[in-house]
Length: 428
Image (cartoon, rainbow, N blue to C red):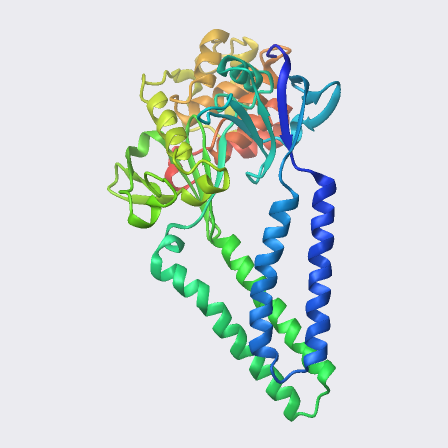
């Protein structure tokens, strides 16, 4: 366990929850006003006026929420450890809520540590006296990228194209207006009342809005950068790419429309050894974090790739699966960790070598999983905790599952997880 971080010269920035409630109340009142307006004007001009007021309402609601939820600033003694982050003795952020943390350097300001949740939402930002203190805070909470994976939510690269932006801006308005007008006309011809027409029109509008929102969320790219590789999820498709499959990373050239934001590039490409190219658009994520000039996502991927290429991973032939079933493989691996002498397949292995292989992301996936199984049965009281911490730093879902099962010493789950381990990580 890392040493706790304690410093009395830190400043914490967090969302003003009371102001958030006020903002939501204002937005709710605005929605009621819209409904009242629609009721008074009747169904005939509903399509045109409804589109305009809905657009204005969305813009206004966004502005109100952003204004009232501006981060509140509090200074005091900050303590960070395995429990989470405390301010003057009060736990302001439990460790289990946080997914990762990273240091932000802004010109003219002290370095800040930003802590985000599993969906990349900003939970807390802490201003520290210097970079050394910022790094110590990250180590104390096991939130640095050495200990956890880096998770990002990106806009699909197709949605960043000019023609797509224009289309998505106008298409919902046109389609929504046409559908609303059609619904109003049909109900009117059927002899429906104004209230029925209004209710059906609002229900149609809400359905269209929810459908568009779900489609947008489904299309977003979930990127996980670990010490062993990258995991991508978009349109329901999952894909794991080991660092060894990547030839290089290449930034996109700067565009005219990105110069207004100060961004040097809107994203980068993963150039795979197979010849395939995967485009990742990072500008929207950087704008959200208020740092468009620096592509910290590209740097994160670049650093992980560079670290992977420093040396080749080690291996032990006694850990290979060979032709064994998953149950036999797990049994023999546990024998290796426990020091059993039941033949060449379960001969004892030095624990230091096993830990080296387990912690090295350059080691083959099968070998790392096997090392975790062996070490979990070694009798080391801290082995389970160390293996569980390492599971947070891997982007490979199959390997992460094997680590967690080994740490929990769940034989049934462990056999299933080890059966799923496959060196063909491209399709994982």
